[in-house]
Image (cartoon, rainbow, N blue to C red; front, top):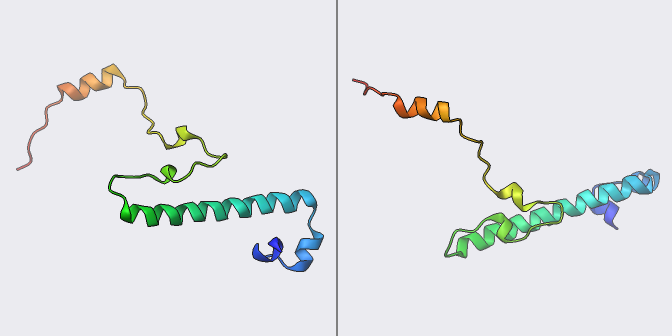
Length: 92
């Protein structure tokens, strides 16, 4: 039974509402899927000839590809000019 694997007692299972149980079960399944992906990623990384990322193994429906992309802020031209014109002196 899934409730036993989730660490619930029989009493907790019978006293839970269906909504609560299915939310907890979905969370439990998600955790198991994340764990399986991590194990597959670590096992594959050892044998990979090129650099791989964890999202190369699987991308789940609750994830967004954009979450794995680098995020950069817009560059302020005035701040860039300040650092471009700065003089740095070497420490003695």
